[in-house]
Image (cartoon, rainbow, N blue to C red):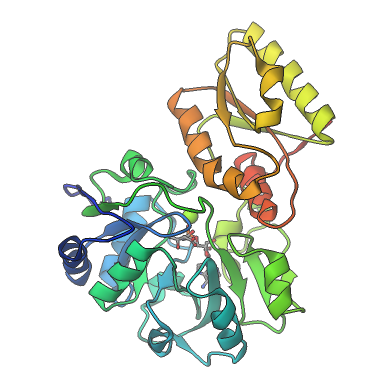
Length: 355
Ligand code: TXA
Ligand code: MG
């Protein structure tokens, strides 16, 4: 069943969010409706996390499979006991350093959180977002808000309200348009329910920063779509995810070899009359001069935070040009680069082209 409604899009200034707009959005949430809103990472598609019927609407609106659990957002840690049980003491250390911020913690689910939030798992993913609009909305609603990224399932996450409208117009009651999100990549998901703290999804908080607080942290190996037991794992780890409509070819190797291979392939495809897009860093730009293709710039490869900000928007812009194939190359996987590398690899359905 698809949830259809008239979508109201309201502009709101992140520097000074208007209290009356926040109150309207909070009322929609309290009445069981859906509100899309910006966080510092990406836009979220929010519903009252204590209302299982409202949460079902999220799954319907996103066409998200019921076995992919949703993150619960909280305003402050006094809401933690409502959301989670048996909170381990390491949470307080992580909170001190990373909250509010781009770190999601997987904890034991409390009985106040309906099972569909977590796809029936006994755990729950919790995050305290830093974006002012997200924080003020949480405060106004006085509820924990369940919110996955505000995109149709498996599409690139939405980093602007236009992206949200592209995917969800008519399926969400209200969109708070606070402009482009700051990071453009989703939060890091850290599972604290096992013996060893494990990163399930790299994201806005880097592994290097986590290691300073939690030296034992490990990273979960990527799952293939073929061997995905949706039970305890994170279905968001599935390789096919964050995908543009176009075929995405990811070139790996030294920057010189990878960009040379991209140029060769781009020329070959253009000569066949194909609509081609490239998602490139500034220093690769001159090589593509004079070719009949669509170019989206990610910024300098020395500025990975900026690359992260532009990645999903670049994929969506190329899709909007209806390109058939997108070419890109791997960049450094250090720091925030790990999250960029992860999203690119998944857009490429797990395949890298060696050069
Ligand atoms: O930055 C973000 O995390 C954004 C903003 C809106 O907060 N949200 C987001 O949500 O990216 P979503 O649903 O697109 O991704 C949530 C990820 C998925 O990979 C999901 O499988 C995982 O978190 N997850 C959620 N609950 C989980 C749980 N109980 N156990 C393991 N993984 C979980
Ligand atoms: Mg998502």
